[in-house]
Length: 377
Length: 177
Image (cartoon, rainbow over all chains, first blue to last red; front, side):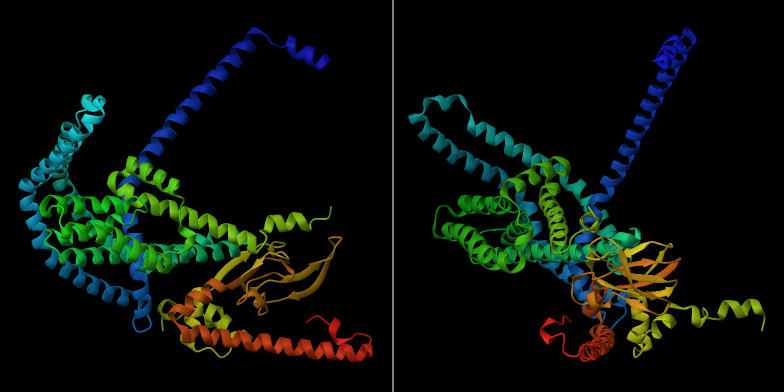
């Protein structure tokens, strides 16, 4: 008690002033540290966003090319096998480009005339539907659907035209950076993982080593499975479309394959341009229905759901549809269309990691819990 | 020759190299030099202080440790938490080899007694090696199997000797191997 009263008596003016000064200085220091820290995180975020896409693409490529490199490694050195795989895949890419270039050129040349034609045709049919609906629900008169579709389509066209040179530049940059990164990931990937694992403390080293192996195995299965699935679906659609008179069959096939990387929503987005073009060019004919059946029944239900997904994709990486929507929305917000495509795989990767850790914990008790239960009570 | 040049061109002292250490372990006695170089690239060198826990009983076990320098105590705890020493291991000894191929909880605890350098070989490394170089990994696993079977044989002989000593007091069903 006496101590307290002494303290109370000790609050002289000088002390109050000092306390005030110290507090002010502390707050100022805190604020300055906070602001510099946030500018640091801002800097690192900018740096990271530049590296994000090339790093991700190189990792995916490294996962894809690792099995053939490992197979060749039985006969050649690691670097030699990587070079052989590189030469082979460059040849394949060159052939694919040779086959695709005329289609792409035709698409680009006709785009200016075709795109307005497609939109006009769609708007016409929407107008018909709206007119039919208007008879029953007079309220919808106030919504101008056709105008909205027209402005939306024009915006899309303008965006595509404006984005193309930019994205061509980006793609050009990526074509140099990604093979370089991939080479190093392929050659030194194991060493990089080993170095990271070696950082863990002695007590947890064994567990970290085991987990890193399990997780990287699951991840490579997942990435390879997804890419193979997209490739096969794209090929099936290309082949199926080439039986009809539809134009741009290879491009539509590639589009369907790429969008197939997004679960649930991707296939629907992938079939929209194909069905739209078929509807406008071929009318509601036998070929149109064949294309619809090809997209929905053959590619999606038969090939993808019944054959590919059970074989290639383990149930481990299946995500709840709601989570898929979240991933697509957040990915789209952060990185645009590419974000939409890679959002879902990234969430799957996180899920795989968590699940592996959980199974590991179930199979064995973790060191801490083992220690606690062993301790005498 | 100039000692300076001598030093540069001479390889690292043979006795100091990791390959030399591995070659003289009973598990890897019959490995070719190519296999030894590959083994050298997959093992992990870990440095421990004195009295540091390597693993505890019931920890998830996924590999074996070889002692390059220092001492390791292997012990078990009874229900009261008192430690019972099972063995003291010195350089050249190895432990934990039973969990290398089959995932199982550790059956005893291990702790360093002085500053110790351990060389770890884990299941993940063996599995990765098996993908790329099946022949090398199978010769490593053969060596491991040989050592484990020798120990198993010695253990069963010991059990039989103890059974005879006990004069039939213990029936074979009660013996846990």
